[in-house]
Length: 278
View 1 (tube, rainbow, N blue to C red):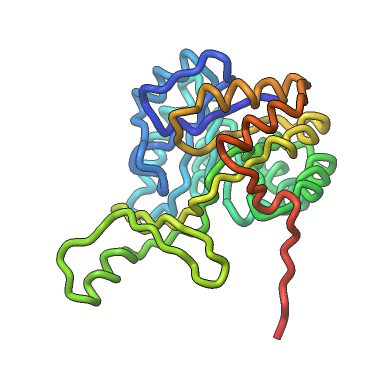
View 2 (view 1 turned 30 degrees about the horizontal axis):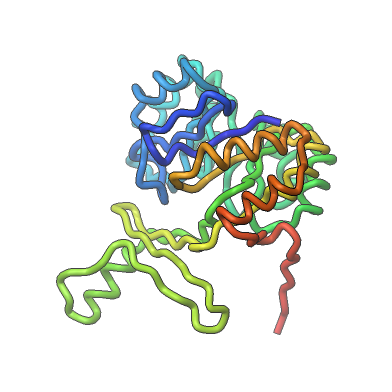
């Protein structure tokens, strides 16, 4: 199993990890740090790199996207994580040499759809954060696709193309507003960070999901990639402990140290989602 980091800090480099996920400039959302084509090429010479394209693509953006994908196909990047199906369409139509990873956030929840995309040439799938560890392990057993899963991360709850913060403050006739803003949901007591950018608004859970213990099962089942996706000054410390677990060192002290740093919240790893029909 390989370890990737979403590179939130352009100055951060870790020689012990396998690679990075880099949000592509102008074609990714929910990430304040984005990378140009030249920056991506440079980093790809040093580490394994997956380019993140997670934006809904408009018709006017398709020509530029096609040009960028053609250029990426001539670099040493390991793959492209895509949300919009225009990426798959362009790669197939132009017969580009790019490894694609299906990354439709909340939609990547079952092996049947993953296998469908695999038949269409998509070689990887980034599992949704809303399914349990048990479901993730079942998916791994039922597909030939490369499987990516978040290990340590702040969950992105939703993204809206609307400018929710601006609209909120305008409704109160206030010209100046905070961005981002923090809100607390009254029933659950959960805190959320709401951040607005030119393409829309992202709502992120303030709590960090600690998947260090589920990681043990992922390693046993030969998951292909584990991902760390949040920004912290303690990244080297967290990476070192995660790498120890991936090597098979499951000393309780390591789990305790990680819990002390990021908490013990495990998201949906052990929590099934139930839907009620009224």
